[in-house]
Image 1 (cartoon, rainbow, N blue to C red):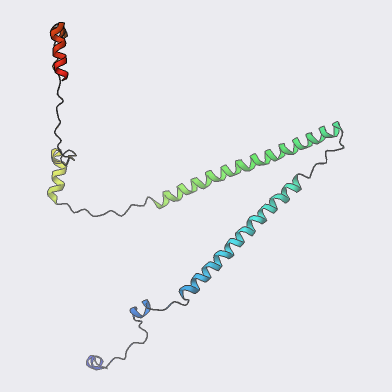
Image 2: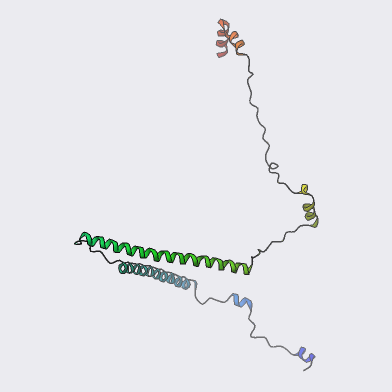
Length: 198
């Protein structure tokens, strides 16, 4: 087959190609109400399983306490038997404290080991650099900012504020009080005060 024969040959439509618009319009397997019903059933089942798990843990805890510490029959015991019982309980408490301390030390040791391994992994991966945004600046802006610090923009917060004129308070002139007393003394002063009040 020559090149011209290939060009003239009519191609059959490719049945394996999928139209993208048809894929986006593909209907879901379940309707919205069915999905909502299934979701609510799943949530109810999960809640009931969670309650059952909590109840099971509570029963296991009670069983462990019963196994470790049987109920005490204190009535009818003599003083010596009570003292022996107290000594036995103190001995058990000491053993439990030692075990608790040992497990606490193991936990702290494991936590420090996990932390050091996390730091090693972080060191191997390296720091992730954030994606930086491009800032459009001309060469003049960059050169001007680098060379001349006086051209740097300084925010002027007072530029947008309104100007308010202050009203000056009227101050009374301070005069010599002795002159005022002499002017108001006698009948003339009282007459002036009486006339000023009217």
